Length: 400
Ligand code: PMT
Image (cartoon, rainbow, N blue to C red; front, top):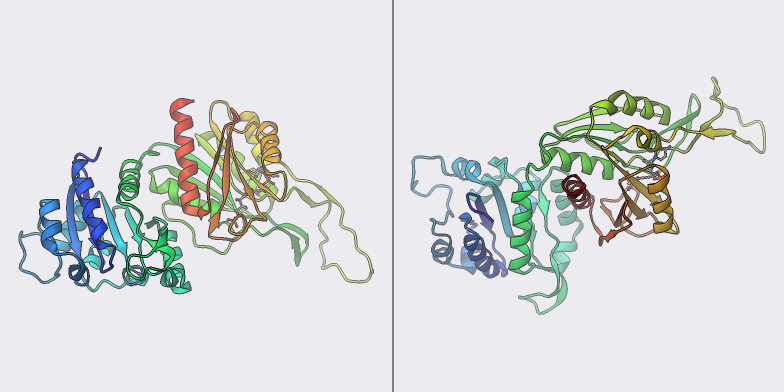
């Protein structure tokens, strides 16, 4: 499966380093070329000779060692890599990369590579849950670095139980396979994504809106662009960074969003409607600030256009994916939206669940297909949810 692929494995100083010996051996059995970089601390846990014998390549530990070739070694490894695997990823290496520090061979190669990087954190559970570590992980995920969730269980060193164990080698190799093989599978596809909230003005200073932060839609845009798709992101007003290599169109109201989507729809192969579009808008917008002269105040509202439904009418064979934000009857409400909007697939999230829906970095979703089949997912980062959705879209394109 990995024939012709070069995997650079970064091993950090943690007790779980011994498990990475098995990972390297399994990667070699899959015919990958493996180059191991060890931090100085890692060499205290496992001898470089072990990795050298298994990978059949010299192990790199020192930035300033005598060069074995005329290549600048960190640049050469960074270029050679089809992907980098960092395991066990300690709080230290995560913190360094998140803050732009490149002070040893491993951090320098990570910084210099354009290949996908998969971190597999393993550390004491209290360290893993530390907000500084979590913030660093979120930051790196936003920049496109991949993370595997640690396992929960008894820690090798402390004998205590918690989340922070290195996943079993078999699982790590599966994730490596996923990272390397899905890399550019959306090349040549054109995807339009709507994201964020819409704002419906009442007067020059007020509007009606919702809690959408744009994180879910932006994660999809980033993941799709990373897999080679040409992505157009039609975004309501949000306060997050625009993804790289994505063409973003800023809009405010549902009417603006409809206009932007319709103007670009003819060029698209796939539509993913993540935006929380206001269902209603004010029947009239006051041209001056409304004064508080009355005890009760009623706003008359009229229905907004349904953007997903409009695309559903004209999509032909193209793929249309919707989202469904629910507080009750998740599946039945989502299924009726799937039918009424002529969607191929709907991603349902119960926004009352902790870690799901608006504003969070994670989501908990069910993907419901037109044929009625459902995939349920546990809590995951929005980027991982995005990857699962794109995998489903890929299957739809292959199998129809
Ligand atoms: O942005 P985040 O903070 O990351 O939050 C993510 C999210 C909760 C917004 C996202 O996961 C989500 O559930 N998005 C859909 C929200 C929603 O409004 O769903 P809905 O059930 O009202 O709409 C169903 C579908 O029709 C959606 O695909 C929606 O984009 C689309 N729609 C709805 C109304 C409308 N007038 N036009 C539409 O296109």
